[in-house]
Image (spheres, helix red, strand yellow):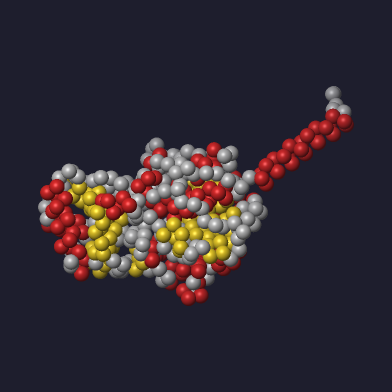
Length: 453
């Protein structure tokens, strides 16, 4: 039997040690960022925890150990999918291609058609920039990540409404069977909200990505059902804070030099009245509803000349034919009359040009955007009462409404401690994370925030 000489074995061992050392140094030299989105988290949950009686020691530590914003001015509309896409692209919805949480559906044929597919994003993302720089990437439940490119390991936010069957062409996880593999380790009664955390923790520990995004949603759900800072909301944020602590610990174990970024997509406000704006369009002959005797499978609307695209407490008014001046005039008159009725709670009527300046709803068919006062939101009913008293929490108000401000916190060895930034723009988040990763987003025009010591 041929035996390797001691000298040859020594050389092989030395080469192997050098290879291990080289790989270790390469990992150390790479940037590492974990970006966690806490859906619907107003900054006050952390910055004013004493006032609102929140128990968030891990998030509070982000303030003393890092850099944070007093608040983040979001996008139009202040809803989940457009906001999350802005946070990974650095541009407004009009540019990145995700204008609302759901697609425009004037006939009511596809009520659960959400923009879940990655190819809907029209500009480069942080995942792309990181991937092209040789960094490994991962994501758990970040919106608009079905069939993604540039994400090495992922569980997509699909189905978006969490009730829609998965389409045959939808790649919602990689590797295949990832969710089932993780779910086998969890109790059977673990909720979907809770599973998102466990998925993120497992992916973080298993794959040790250089850049990872994760999206936690149970605070948003609690606030929709009740209000911001309700007992249910305080319970949810306490649980999330515990999860954040575990995710940070796992990331620090992977990479002691990692930067942790905590963000949210929008704030929240109490919204007790639902205003079914489409009923006014039916009454004015702009929407023709189906007969009450229709089959259950038939769409509720037969035809339309102008319709309402709801985004919480804002609504885009869409014309079937943008060139029809008579319809445009009729719509304008209807909206101005409705705005004079205090029971409807209308705050502003934005023209198409004003909407474009705010970076929202770029389609020329969007003639107006109607924004409502806090306490009111838009309903989609086409019959019944125009105004309904249904206590609820909402987001989607104009980004200038203070209650809609979202959150930004970051900490790490290369981050200034205890620095408060004031109010920042949501479009600054992506270029800031890009700088942390040592990459560039050419479409992002706003500068990164000043987080370095």
